Image (tube, rainbow, N blue to C red; front, side, top):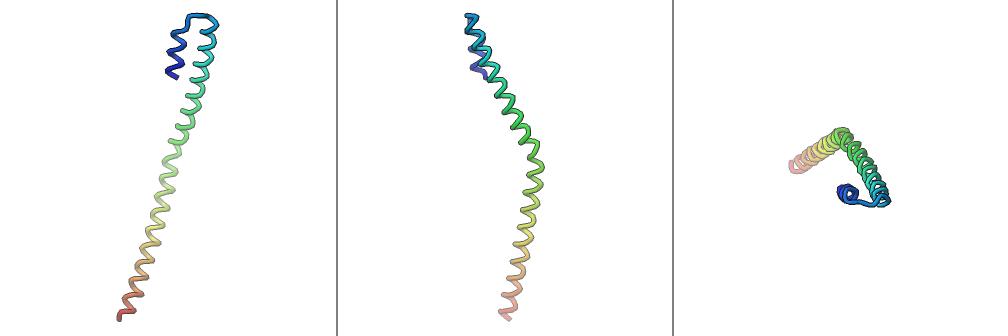
Length: 79
């Protein structure tokens, strides 16, 4: 986008100026579209974070229960 803006400022010929203006406007449109996508993704981060935290906590609890059961089985086997 910066390159297109610099090219637009440097253009002297009216036809070239029109073409460079069109290219610049396309660059601005593409930039704004990407900005919307990134903003939308950033807005969704807290939702994803909560979901991932819940998944990790569930996994940790399952793992803890598994190891507690295995320790109990081993303890009973040793006695």
